[in-house]
Length: 405
Image (cartoon, helix red, strand yellow):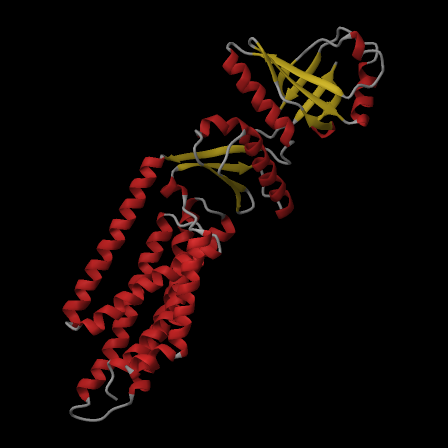
């Protein structure tokens, strides 16, 4: 009993317990952010016409986020990927339904006889669209300066078409009425159009209202990739990952038991592996990291290296005990020190191998090989958790309950 008390009072064990409690609390309160490949949804890859600075990229992601929210799409994630790509993650909506919203620059112009009378920058507010049969209307309000400019250009041109362009595409061309051609500024403007069916008219009106409301993108964009994972397939991936994890734990436990044939050695190794899993998920919960399939692969790899390290520590101590029968050798601390030298060296080389992959993901974005940055990042987290939290606690367990030095 005294050994157990001393073990639980050791600072390395206390640190492990504190981190475990914190991780469980974080997972319970904040939850774990699942990737789209686990919860189902679509990823739209948007490529900008040229690299942009961080301020411009923030404008791009802000406009796209506003557009999708205005369009009524929930559960959206819009994030930059490097300096020329944007990743849009959506759940519960078909990507084709929003491709026109996120893939258009949103440049709006009103021209009278090829003279620009209004632009999107003059729009102050956009009112709800109106559908009458197969015809639609999107009323909006412009600034006083915009109304003055429009009045000056429209003066004396009653009956002339007012061409309204969205991304250089003519969307409406009503005739200029007498009331707007008298030179008196008016801040109320209406863009109109029609479609073959009422549903199509409503869709067009909603898209135009959304684009006008969210403003124009500062650079031209184009959609370069769309991928979707259904919610059912996401559930299958999640179940598959869970089964793979359980099978890995069973196989590892069996191999360790065959090697040592001693529960007092096997159970701590399994507990340590589970503790590392909880700690990695807890950290991911705190930093809001997506746990997707590459991240799960990274967790399994990190836990696998953790088992290797614990076998190294155990073997070093047991090897010393066996040789002690014939001759005395270095004490327990020297054995652990030797084991940890191997553990640190192994961790350093593995982190060094993962850093380039993680760097690509952070610097160039989560496209191409960068999508594997989640694997590298969770592997690195798992290794750091192991060498700074769980390995020292495991070594203390070996010192108290296994070593006879």
